[in-house]
Length: 343
Image 1 (tube, rainbow, N blue to C red):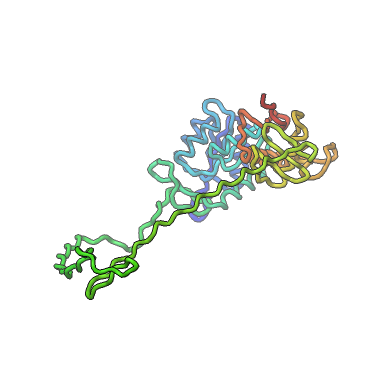
Image 2: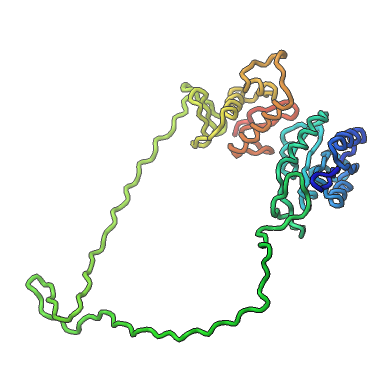
């Protein structure tokens, strides 16, 4: 039950009794002391009381849901949060990660996969939270270790402040040499040469030369750039100010190029070609693999999750909204399509 002197404690927050018992079995076989709760409020209190290394969290629960419970836990704990839910939509995954979850698994899940994900998370170091409850991270902890840590910067060992401050030293009197008189213009001008330059008299300081003002050249206005041509005959597809050319592998928004990966460009080009026709996640996954959509090809949940990640990155680069999309619209339970054209 202990690793390097540290207790391996896990908290389960799950309202389904069968799944709760399954999670208890999996985590106990992994060497954890398990505390199981049936709702969000009890789960938050258990995390506060037992300070677990790992916490599994259901999303749909009576009272506060898993998203709110994760936000409350993150205010005082850096436990590894694993969300388990039957919701498999992209927006639910993003909400869970934004609430503070470290991983997101959909039900039904495989016990071996859950155990492998937990062990993988514990190999990564975590930053502890400040003990004052401010939620600010401090020094990182070793992998799998919980508890308060010393905030940066740490005090040097063996250092002790002086018992009494040293008496201030009396300043020594400083004597400065007399300043040399600055240059003064002569009261009477001396004789001049025929060219109008005054003749220097013996012992008379030389006046600095007077420089002529330099006139900066006027900036030359650059000629305006020629407008970009998006001719349909050249292979350009357009939608709401977004232009894509599959032959040139170019994507531009409002006249500015967009830096996309190969997968992101292929997904965007597929949606542009399909317009308002819905493309399923399995269809898009096979597209990236270079296969046609037939029942002979298997598409796993990991492949579909990869499509969700690519779409999330594509939305971010396009600055597109999930709730009010301009280009990529999510069809719940099916896939994606282009949003409606602007009027």
